[in-house]
Length: 80
Figure (cartoon, rainbow, N blue to C red):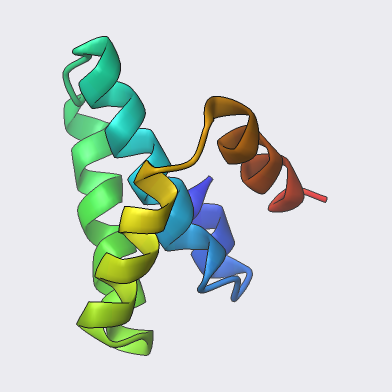
């Protein structure tokens, strides 16, 4: 969903989703699949080309603090 947000120019939403996804994987102790890791790196690279690194970190931190319901709202908004 974060990659889709970047493609659509939703640059503030994408790092929120990345942060939320990382936090969920950590809570669930779920490993990152190789294809997900590659997509994550590509998405993060595209974000850092368009936003400052500190802004990306700030938004990812905000995303990590989202509840599951809030993260789902952001993800759903990216496909509307």
